[in-house]
Length: 405
Image (cartoon, rainbow, N blue to C red; front, top):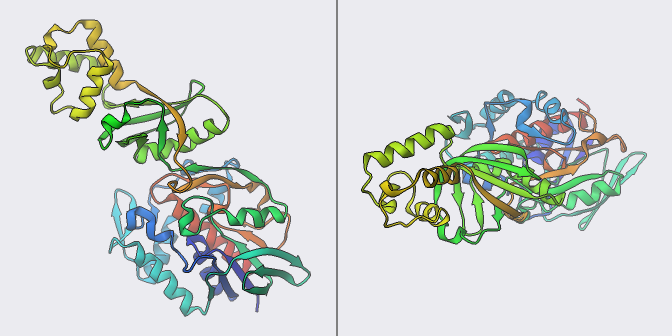
């Protein structure tokens, strides 16, 4: 029997192990934490957004642009839904975002563990692989709990994001020992820290808007949704979606700014007209009263402070230039990004094992019989189930190929 070792017991590792076992291989998982799948429990705020019905190539990023989609096409979202339905997970659709009906990430992990047990997969926890040694018969794996002899290896040890869950970057060293190179690994789907000192005054505010990231004056990415303002800067899903571009710009020592539009449904002309009409309707209102029902009072106070407008003055006394400046401030709110939050707060990483060195079947071009799956590769997806879909797709392909199916 073909013996396959999966290094890493996360989402991609579990999928790879299950797929290899279903295709006739004897499988063991080597996981250096005390249990498998810990990161799955944290996904979707504990509800596990395990895939997304909206799928297209631009949902996935890599320096090797075409690589991720070739893998996704081999095990797509519909196949993922069918796979989990077979295991007992009935999915709940929230605008294309798929969750288990129970809204419990633990259910997704439990059905994977049950299937692993059914298939007789050996799971060795608290077992760290120190070295992968290729030989004529396959591989010798040196761990802190003895050695393992196998014919194939799937390296699914994760990235550096959320290291407390086991994804601590240890797999990169194993890949580098075997000749593979890394695309620089940076935090992604992460909060952004800003230079300005007024953020503590607006901390805790959630507001709809758009976020555009610029590096050296060129727009790199834009997204719209609920922005969360923190004591150090900006957060929320739209910030997460553009954060990889900010991380790359900072790594390249470029000037990085974010431009926030707090009224993105209006053109500049429409918003200016809206403000003038609102002023004309109640010119006796104070500047402070003017924003009630439009913006959170913490934001309103900030607009007035930055625009040098007296909160107690009547809005009917504003000049045309002052109204225009206020409109531009709200729709073109520029803030300087100084850094991302750390890997501990990041959901995934940008970068990883260079996919130019990996075949479309996820086998190493340098070491026959060595396969890769999941976040260890230079692939990261948008927020919204895409990174788990990458885990399922890459795990399936690697597991099937390693089993020789």
